[in-house]
Image (tube, rainbow, N blue to C red; front, side, top):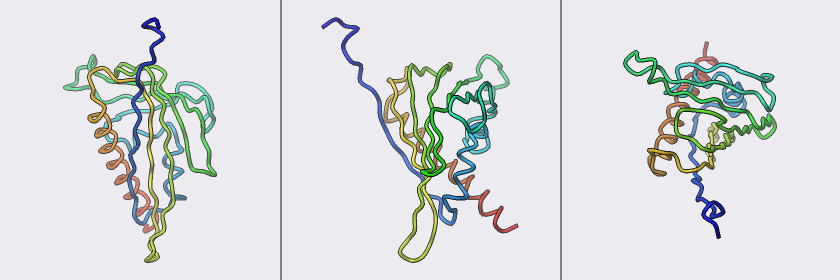
Length: 168
């Protein structure tokens, strides 16, 4: 078998974060607004629409971190394409189509799942799964850990937002 025909191993992973007291109906619109991820994701300073129709597959967003030490050459960025958006299942998928972050291929699915505790408490969970080629400069466990910590911070921000919007 020629070397270019040998399948390369893909990285796969999944992480989740619970949002106690926030319903899936409150959290889904925050996640579904594809071009507002900068409001929730800890490292993203800006995110805006580049192409496509808001809320429709094919929408492309540009996301970037803030420059490190005000050096514009250190800006890390990605263009991401919305592949699917399902309001019934509260699920979206997207892929990175271009970036300077070392991604060769990356597809992710994010879903908001309701959880109801036996004690009558309500809440939801965000599940984030991915499949990608190995990323230059990263180990799989480091990448998983980064996504997990980022999702935990996103969940905290979203919980604060939903609690503030219901109390005042």
